[in-house]
Structures are given as structure tokens and as C-alpha cells.
Image 1 (cartoon, helix red, strand yellow):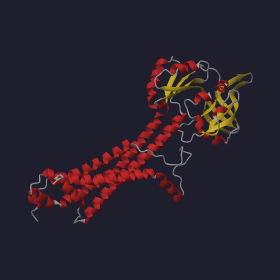
Image 2: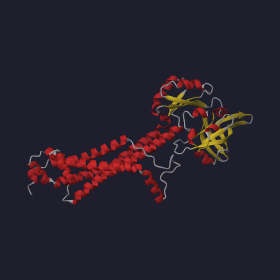
Image 3: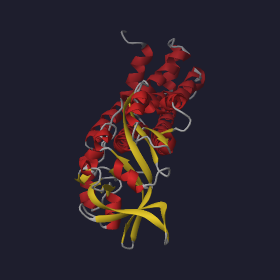
Image 4: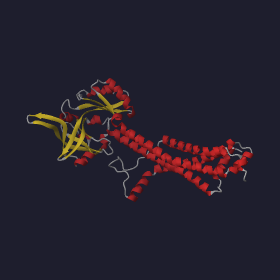
Length: 415
């Protein structure tokens, strides 16, 4: 016989017709349950990976990866500082800024914002602000023109369009013979950028760096550099090196400090979803245990005959391990194929459901897209398949041990 005896008999038991049809039904249900669990788990993980990639791509398109800030005025010597910082391994580019807290005011409407004074040509090196523009352009931020680029949320809240005037108030005050008056300036909206899905409460607005120096009083404004890194996950290490390199008046922070909790929440959400959906495969494996126990009970006379013909208890045990493993392999393969197909066709399915039930599952106001982004990671596919096969083998272990302990005399006593 070419094939090992346990494999040969295990495969025969897998495809043989049962005297008890309920056992066949449980076997079919277990296989479909494993397939369903694998397919759903792969699809959900792929969608979550897609959303995670979209969030990271759009987040780092706007958010600085590392920020050097100081209360001193560096607008005159920022090129030397940028040259010094650029010598650190991993730093790709830098751009200067002047910032302060402000408030957009239009009649009786107001919106709190962070005001950043930038140089558009330098800002293009470290962010994709120009690609996020829904109207207007960033190049309109020329010194002395007092133009301003605002987020879409503020434009909607204040009912603003490109070309409208808007007053920008600061938290600082100007002393005059008549008393204290808040510092403010009227700007013209020259651009609106898309900030959908942002996780920050105060949205940044952008003006020319020279205009920011005029708006904020000397000594009351923050200036510094925004850095772009070759690897965003190296931000903490590079921040430590920069802190040791720069004078003590500089403060160094990075995205892991400002928004790290947000990405940790995303990772935890994916982990919890993985564990919850893994229970589907575990339930199917539990059904597999029940099915194999009934098969062992049904096949006790066969087990006894095999033992009398010279089969060892280990051979009997391996027969049922093979049977459980084969069902697990079939279920995993079916689930893998179904999961990949469902991931590929998930958007047509979602669109059909939206049109049928007239609902919007993915609002564009909360996300950057109105479709389900998907990304299949080979590591997820391998992990899910290995766990599915492992649970199937584990489910077959106890029934195989029961078959291992079957005594031929006891099994044939009433035959």
C-alpha cells in the first residue's frame, strides 16, 4: 500500500456515507463553519488594513512627523538650523513655521484654530497640503496679501468661500491709551482644504510666515521646524537625538506623543475584532469535536476489528486525527478562496446593499473616501489559516484519544 494506513483509512472515513445522516450533517456544518469563519475574518482584517492605510496616508499628508519649536525668533536663521537638523540620519526634509492660537470670527460665528505661518515652497517638502485643497491654492499665501487657507469644517461652520473676508483674533492684547484691545487682523480666504476624518479638535489654518509674525506679538509666538522622516516609526529615536543635539530652549515632539493614542486605539480595535471573529472558527471546531465523537462511537466495531488485525492504538488515533485534519483543511481552503473573492468584490456588495436599503454605510464627512478600502496582508492570511488548521487538529485530538483507548473486547461484546 503506497499511502500510510492511517491516512488511507482516515480519507475513506471522510468521504464514506454514514449510517447516521445526522453525523454527515454535523460534518458538513463544521466544515462550512470553519470556511465561514476564515472568510469573514480575512475580509474584515483586509478592510481594517485598508482603512488603517488610508488613515495613515492622509494623516501624515498633513500632520508633522517631528516638530522642533522654540519661543525665540528663528525666522532669520532657520536655513542654518535646517542644515544642522538635516545631518541627522533619517531626516528627509524640513520646513519653517510660526504658530499661535487664534479664533476665526465672522459676525456672531466663531471657530477656534491653530494658526501656522508657513512658506508654501518649503511646506511642500514635508506635507501634501496642496494635494488636499478642495478650492483655491496654497501658493496664494504671499507676504503682505494677508490671505488664509482654512479647513473645510471651518468653512462649513462659518459659511465661508474663497474670496470671503474673515477676522482672525489672537489670545494676545495690544495696549493703547484707551485700554487693552485684542490683536486681530482681517484676512481673505484664498483656499479651503479637505480635513475629513481628522482626529484633532482644533484645525490648523495657514497664512504666510511674514503675516504670522505681524499677527502675533514678538515673544508670544512659537517658531520652529516641521520635519519629514524616511521612516515615521523612527520618530521617537530621532526626537531623542535632536533633543541632545539642539540647545535647551528647543522643544522636540513627534506624532507618537501627539496622536499615538489614536493609532494605538486603531491597533487595539483590530486585535479585538480578530479575537471576536476567531470565535466563529472556535465554534466550528467545537462542532467538529462533537461530530468526531459520534464517528468514534459509530466506528467502534471497525476499530475493534482493526485492532484484532494488528493495528496499534497509535494507528487508530492517527486515523481520526487525519479525518479531523482533512475536514479542517477543506474548510480552511474554502474559506480562504471565499475570503479573497469577497475582499475583491466587497465594494460592489456594499454598493448593492446601500442601493437596496437606501443607507450610507461610509459617510464622506467622516472618512476620506466613500468606498471600502481593502488591503490583503500575507501575514494575516498565513496566521488565520494556521490558526484554523491548528484549531481543527486540536478539535480532533480528544476524539482520537478516545478511539485510542477503545478495547476490542468491549467493543465487540454485543456484536
